[in-house]
Length: 474
Image (tube, rainbow, N blue to C red; front, side, top):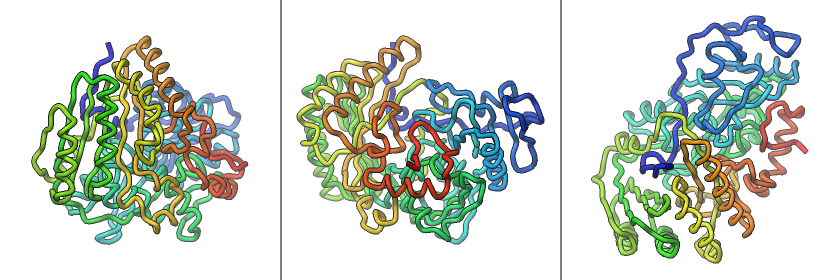
């Protein structure tokens, strides 16, 4: 039977670790295209049958199985430009992979080219508050560099997420309410466009705007990112509230109370409601002081929960590792299930979704707090991320180990999504895509979609860089 996933596993799932890149690259071997790519010091090409092909094509989600014609493992920006020019010459659609975390496998394709950025993972300090990072840099690597220096970039909690995919879709995590989304700390990008030209946002504010939440795999391949970093909180403290053997009515009562009290949390706090089968779990983290406002929320949540556990204030670097998650690929489906303004928006029909989750072992329904400094007029004006007015973001998850379990859970997953879709949910988070969303451009980008289309026409007029739900120029 599908097992119930524990706290470390459900908050976020982690992708492949850095690859051991020891294989002979492709040199003139038979491919379904007339002109063969030639590897050099900037880029190495692999095709099916090469030793690294299987490792390079796979991501963290074992449910996704695609076979590109060629994989370009790039060493630098020049290598990315060479690979894009080859793909354009051969009319190969391009997918972009940094960490391989895309929940619907948009970082790989069939019969096209995958540009793999895992070797572009360096971190360099431009000054004490500014860093330059490669898109393949994983969050654990980033935190290991920043936290000993007392600095932080607000990112996710999964250790092996690549920073490139995270920031381009917005990027939220435990400290987004304190510092803003990951994209709000982005100062500059270097990008290879759909013609193989190297561009810098230093000369184009519209490009920087689009890269702050406009999604990855749309306009070009970002090869360098410059970020402002922040003074890191010294510690993190967590409260955990658990209630076992809940039914739909009990789960709804806890969820309603959670919605009611969490808007009173200070920006230093993050909270998530998680319904894991018949277990209702609430996480509350705090990187600031334990104030009266925090205690008021703790008291209210304890009153509706079965068990409350408090951890000691722990040094931040050690506290974050609790949420790093599983290191190995697995079968799963994880997608946005709507951004909400308050409980009244879902009160009329949430019972239907909770009914399915509580009777489906292996399924998780989670709602996370947004708000805080995510709601910032300057950030909103400078970024394509469109959903700052929503204080809550939900996600639906399913995990399994066998094919039959997967078929059942995928069907149940869609039933829950149908509940939300049929009741007028119109905002979804791009970094948690669902291949079954209709009108995904509007759901992910709202009124910013037309502006993003103009950026697409400018930098990739031939739609070379694309996936199933990428921004289209027309």
